[in-house]
Image 1 (cartoon, rainbow, N blue to C red):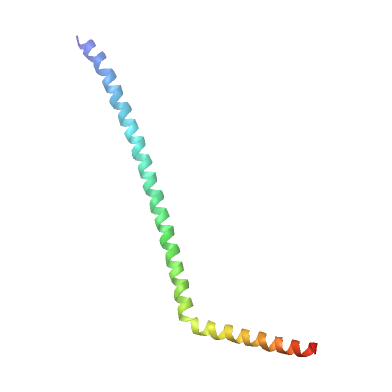
Image 2: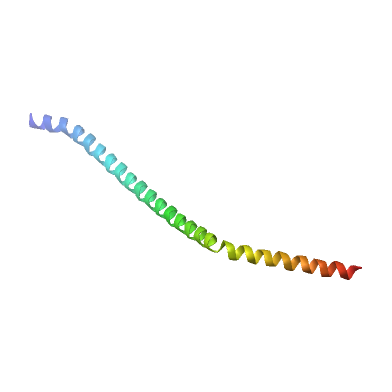
Length: 88
């Protein structure tokens, strides 16, 4: 009688062990997905910090950069004027 009970219990136990293995595999997959998402979020945060730093630099130096570009434009115009005078 006990042998019959053991034989009947064996498939149920195997099914439960199989289900447990599947759940453990699913858990490992979910943990990996979570780690990947955390790394992605961290990289995006670092990128955002760098963009913010670049933007702060541009805003704080806008006036200097603008004056520098205006001087370059004026120098090009003077060079054009000199060169066009040489053609005549």
